[in-house]
Amino acid sequence: MRILVTGAAGFVGSRLSKVLLERGDQVLGLDNLNDYYDLSLKERHLADLRPHPGFSFTKTDLCDAPAVAKQIASFAPQAIAHLAAMAAVRYSVQHPLIYGHVNVQGTMNLLDAARPLCDSLGSPPRCVIASTGSVYGSSTPVPFKEDAPADRPLAPYPASKRAMELMAHSYHHLWHFPTTILRFFNVYGPHGRPDMMPWQWSAQILKDQELTLYDGGKLKRDWTYVDDIVAGFVSALDKPLDFEIINLGCGRPVDNLQIISILESLWGKKARRKDIPAPPSEPKITYADVTKARKLLGYDPKTPVEQGLKHFVTWLQAEHLLP
Image 1 (tube, rainbow, N blue to C red):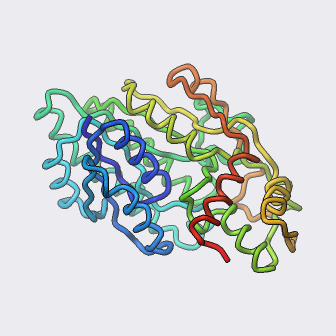
Image 2: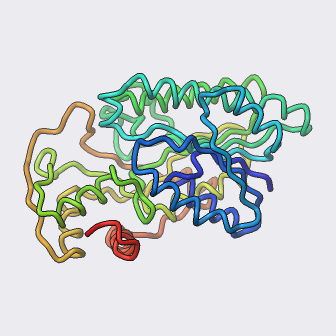
Image 3: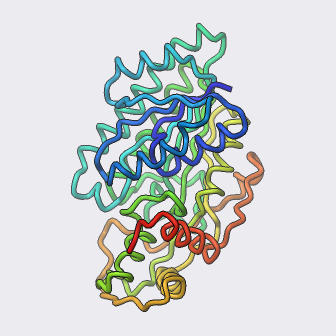
């Protein structure tokens, strides 16, 4: 299958591309290679993909509508895996305008560029789009179910993702794209981003720097290992649905104190901690109900956080990414 992967140099996009290539798919990776974090990490991801004969890559910004249209017309994908986005809740509080431009307008450019394929291919390409469990905000009953309104996001990042979901539905309704929205929950693991908590806390522990705990570490997050997320994404690509929104989480929230305790054990060093109140952008808990994912995708998250963090720390050590 010819699959266009946006955000192919990023964390989940690169891991998804690798799995697709290893099973024989042809992948065109798009990424704008922005400098939100160290570009050498993105180049490391691409170096892992380039040896595969089925992989090609182009530096393309989704906000450049003509460039996106050119790539899609040339490649004529049978499926689109859309993972390119500006991520991070806290960064979005400081830089809100970027999120509307990249996450909403960029997604519209991508979907609009794919519209001509509905005629040229005889059927529209299936679309699988990465969203976030952060769209549920703090007023949704736990565990979070997909039929919750998700109309009270706490920061520009989840707001932009919810807007993206709604725009994707309008394109599905008008032009009949088979579309699956996957709401990711707290993805972590090897090849993760350095701004994510497991990497940040690991660095602070090793450097004997004080790390910040919100509300005494009582916030709970549904940490989901990257391999489980990728398995769910592949299942969604292989099973085109009409239009569905599906949670991809682990379904076992863990408080941040436990995460720090696990990291302390893995690194063999105690953390210095500073307790401050949680900012308004932070929900008390994220907790995915994955019943729908199990039913429609055969999704079965297998990796407990203790095992996943061990894999992550082993990768950081092997790649010499932390002192």
